[in-house]
Every structure is written in structure tokens, then in C-alpha cells.
Length: 437
Image (spheres, rainbow, N blue to C red):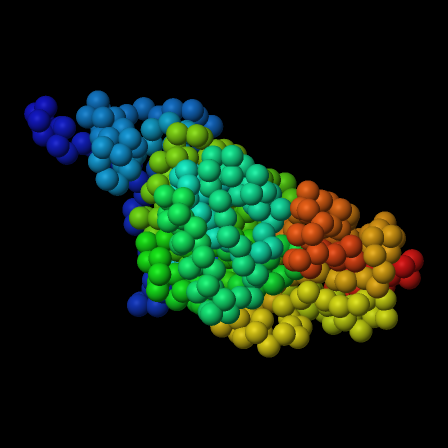
């Protein structure tokens, strides 16, 4: 029986699952295989094959010394964070299993989950930005992300410098030099380089490798974060191309059934820890039931995304030759050589969300949308069902018109997220809807 001193120095180990096997006979296991059990030990849950939903607000400590040590980690008095389950604003079994599995997809050291994609993005930015700092970001961004920087963080003295998604290394050097000078003049720092690639809703790609090289040259301590929702986790792995933090709206492809809202970030612990500390204070962690649903969805994310990608390729092949279609923003049919070069280096697939430019304007787009029968008129993307929306009047309505014009968010742009229905049925649906244009 250890004495009191021993108990303080070596608290009871946390009841964690045994380290999961990540390889067989020297062969690394693929993420799709690890999604079936990684991070979960049935022995710890009465032998239940799948993790139960842990609906609890607090957790019993093994000892007083263990409780003290957990809070030393949570409060930052000791590095490493909590070593056990403490309180559901900080952590929980479902959330920790989910975070372990999300990290697998991006090859990340750590991951955090949130109640929505925007909660993840907002807490991420707030964790790094202080008064008089500058955020550098690509454009376009999802309207709520761009609005948070321009309208909310600006109230606390944070400014921004933006650049177009396809910017070259030379253009990026100039942007970062401008941001660095602006931050110095204000007495702050460049807090973050925030990217969205492909951009919502144009599908414009950012050269992450060029951003990394430009950052390394002048701002080596500045984190690069990227919203990878449109292609992740299957078709792009930004951490391999120079990003430090990857963010997702898990509502989209990872959740994939249009029945939950959640978000996440992943990266090295040194980048994730400041965000964890702020999440511990503010809350915003995903709830246990939603985390459990996401564990279910992760088991089929590869299958769903593959089917949706195959469908999108066939649908876009039909749309690009239709007389009432002016053009496509689809990564499988890139006309610009700069964008094609980025795609070849950064992407593993073209995805299943794209923009279609209808000949005409808002009225023609509305007639097309109102006559769809299989595809649903709704925002969001990445679900099992096909969705279509009009960004200029819906998701990006709050963006000033001059900004929309600059970014190519036109009145004749329809955003489509192709699902896993039969491709021939989808083509027939788009064909009959276009007849009304």
C-alpha cells in the first residue's frame, strides 16, 4: 500500500484502453480499418462491441491525488493536460475516442472536437489572436468565417490582410510583408495565417506549400490553419503540405447524414494545446451523443465519399456540355494551369461539391432550383443526399456586393453537393430542371 507521498507523486493510472495496434506484420493499418475500433477497449465498457453513449456531466476520481493532478494539467500548472476524465466541459469518453480517430485521418498528433465547425474556427482564432494582432487569410472564405474576422475580432482590435486563393509565392511574400509591417505598426504580431481550400463556394485552391515557404521565410512562429471541409478527410491531407492545424465542419462529409452539427481541429500538440485551454474555459465541446453519432459515421466515411465523388464526376460530365450551363467550378475539370498545378500537388480527388454557372442570373438559378425533384434545395453539403443552393442570396448573402464580385460569387452560381443516389437519376433530375431555365 503506497504512503501519502507516493500517492501524490504517482497517482492511480487512468483507465485508458490498451494502445491500439496500428500495424500488422510491419504493415501500417489504413484509417478505414482503424475507424472500427481505434481508441476504444470493450473491456472497459462491460464488453460492449461499440462504445456506449456516456451521458454524464462529471466523473469520479480514483483518488484525491489523481483529481489534483488532473486539475494541474487542465489549469496549465503542469504540461500534458488532464490525465483522466474530469468534467464534460473538458473531456469525456465519446469525445476522446472520436478525437483519437479524427487524428488518424490527418496523421495528426492531437485533435479537438467542438459543437459546430464555426465554434471550432472561432475558438481557434481567439486562442491565437490578441489586441493589435493581424490575421492573414485567403479568399473567399465561408461567409461566417470571414465575418467573424472582419466584424467580430475587429471589435477587439484585430485586423486582417487577405489574398486570393490562387496567389503565387511572390504574391504571398508581398502579403506577409504587408501584414508583418501592419502588425509592427500596431504593436502586435501576425497571429495566424488562415486558409480555406477549396474555397466556399468557388472551389478555388490555395497553394499550401507556397504559403508554408513564405511563412517560413518571414514568420516562422506563425501557425498556418486551414479549413479542409470540402475535401477532407479523404481527398486532401493539408498537414502533409505545410499546414499546422486542419479544421473541419464535421457536419459535412464526416457526419455525412445531415443529422448532426459539429466541428474539429487537428495538428501537433503544441498548436492544439492553446485551443484546448480556451475550449476548457468557454465550453463548446461536442456533446456525447453527437460524438457517438460521428463515431458511427466515421466507419463509412470512405465509402460514402468515394460513391459521392464518382457520382459528381458523372454529373459534371453531363453538365459541362449542357447549352444552359455557362461553366463549372469542379476540380475534375480545371481550366486554369495554376489551379491545376495546385490540384496535382495537393489533392487526392476532385470531391463531390462544386459550383455550376447557369446562363442568366438569379431568376434563372431560382427556376432551376425550384424544379429539382431528387436534389433538395438546402444549404450545407457532404451528406448522403444531393443538395443545391444559391450562395449569393443564401450562405453568402451578408457578404458585401463588391466583395462578392471580387471573389466570383455571382448571381448565376449554384452550389451543388452530390450525394450517393444513383448517378443516372441525378442526371435526369438536373436535365429536367434545366428545361425550366
